[in-house]
Length: 313
Image 1 (cartoon, rainbow, N blue to C red):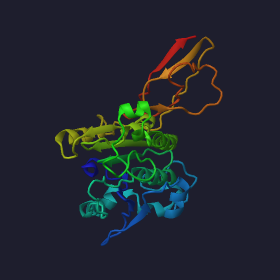
Image 2 (image 1 turned 90 degrees about the horizontal axis):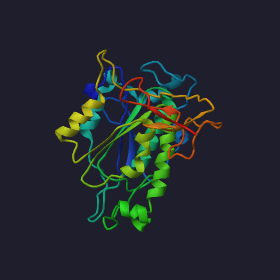
Image 3 (image 1 turned 135 degrees about the vertical axis):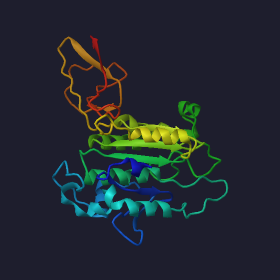
Image 4 (image 1 turned 60 degrees about the vertical axis):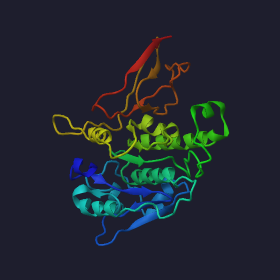
């Protein structure tokens, strides 16, 4: 469905994950090729670039259809829809469940954090500061590797609000996982990219720990019971809604700078945004629950920025 809603010159890629993480090549014909990564390991952006042979160039905004800085190696994994439509469709049709069997009483192995690390590292190396979004589809919690929120064993119940408040054993992964995803969200926001989370499962999927990704980048969070429901499909189609001019209702990497007079201080920001990291902030009310957030990424209305609340000190 997403391929049919995208323009023919849109650049796409595909990563699948389970026990391992597979980054699929889209330029091959006749046989499917993919790079397989260990799902229990955290891959830094530099490591991903080295393993894939990607060298970031100097051009911050590549031309449509061209990878960053003339890096031809990226064209193996990211190609326009018009070029890779058939091969990408074939890969999806040939996908099989994780070949590693799941013993009775255990959850499926999901390397969600490792898969996101590879996706974010790939976009950082190829299209920094260019409009890009990573769409994560998951049907259960991450159970191994960085960002895991629970174990493989069903006897180890996933954390509840009570466990988080009381810091029980069931919530032992919460702080570490939240720290991992928050650091990743910072990287994504700095590159002007967006992360969407589509979680369809009857059980919890770990959105509490992953909330930083859509909150910092302006992405979507869609929850449901199944991907096959009409409600989810209608919601998913709205992500690709267009305006009267035929352009997507999306906006990327918006920046909001607020200059205050000495009598006023910025108290906070409403909306998905992240601080620009300014060191000298005189007119900021740090006593408020929100810190000053100057970097704004919004996806609903092009050119629309989050509202800034001002209070007289």
